Length: 227
Image (cartoon, rainbow, N blue to C red; front, top):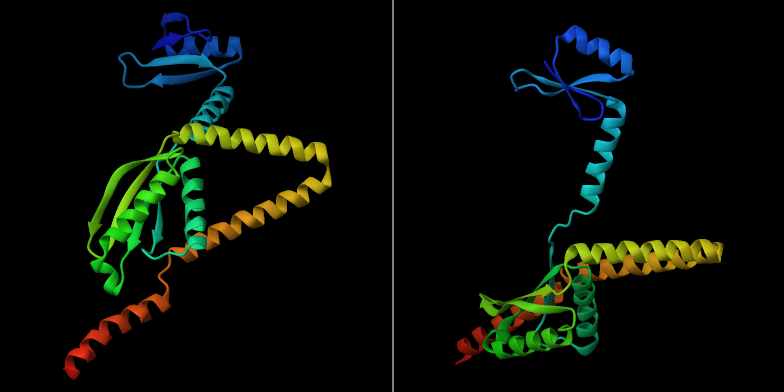
């Protein structure tokens, strides 16, 4: 076998017995690092330390790994101001996190004949969040929906780094302020959970809207029968 010393130096080609003798002399492990090589390559090392360092490197790599996520937000063309502000707040949060956002305008009934309403709403939203994101995919009609994709100015890795720094700062502040800080953080966590639940509820179709749409479709049919 070809033997590599503990400091990376080349010992040379030695028999197995000699390599084991050197491993015992250095109080290290004899580890095969290139089994397919001819002759095979082995190295003298502390295998336990090597496994620990490899695990730490892999953990750090996973920690810094960023996955692009596309969030979705659904709106109606005639959304009221309060709901619009709420939805915009979610879009702002997604963009700050470095995620893309797919905005879907859902047309129901007679609204399908007024696509300009959806277009203006998407343009308004894009203008409101232009400091955080840009229009990656321009508004386009897709059946009964109109879709636009917003991309964040900030990369996912940058957003993750800022989020970790903010979390560390809050943790340091909490330790400095004492038990009262824990209670305040608990309240903040409850607010964040409520926002997520509100987002999920907003993305679920409203049964009342479906009923209204059915009524709009049936009304012209009845008028035609009367005629």
